Image (tube, rainbow, N blue to C red; front, side, top):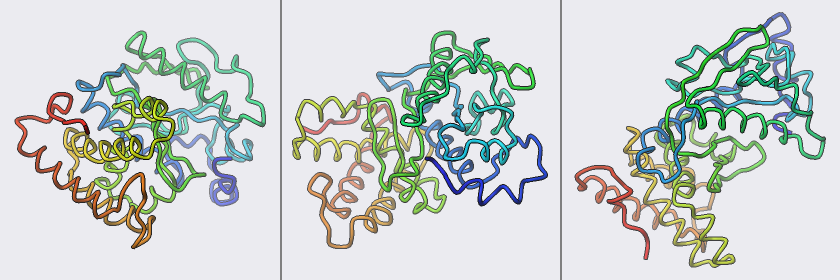
Length: 307
């Protein structure tokens, strides 16, 4: 599952802790960093996204998604299976005083224990349902109340954001996106070494796929290399607009190509669906010039789609 080594690394060091409520390891810190960067971009671009909804900037986790749930509970000081795994910095959950590693007992009064434990063959099923409960309540009411295992209630006032879920996928080396979800491969994420502009470029590229609904185009094309190439080029170009609106350096998208993509593809490798990293960097540089010459960063009106 997600991190089978987790308890082996951390349990001895944390054996004497109780209910610690801050990120305790690299896994949680990375999740919160990815969520924080994505959240900033989602909120900054909400006015331009066709699919936007009130959101909390809170990412829940389920110990059932790990190989050893009991060790995870002990390591993180949890009193139940459902807990806060990541919080977007300066997001609604952060503003409400919620902390990472807070055990959640109920969402809007509904006990999470009413959701059956997931089967071994589908360990993420319960987490998907519970995260949907949180997101649906925020979208429906503009706010959501979480009840902790200690009986405290935390009301989170949601903020409008582009609708897409962002997670680090520890089983993948690359990033990918659908219209609802972004998965960042662990290898790519680690290769950024915490450079927020490079990470914003990585997230921005995948977010562009989501907000432009490239999934529908790719499905209709039945795997056409030409259509895939077009969507990848659009995602490279739109990423700089998404970054700029959130205050990230759009040049980080060029650095992303020069460092992470060049290293992962190989010096002489040219991906037929993406092109070479040098070609992509040139396209991005041209788009940055277009962005900087535009009267505003309203990409819904200023961005030119690929023919």
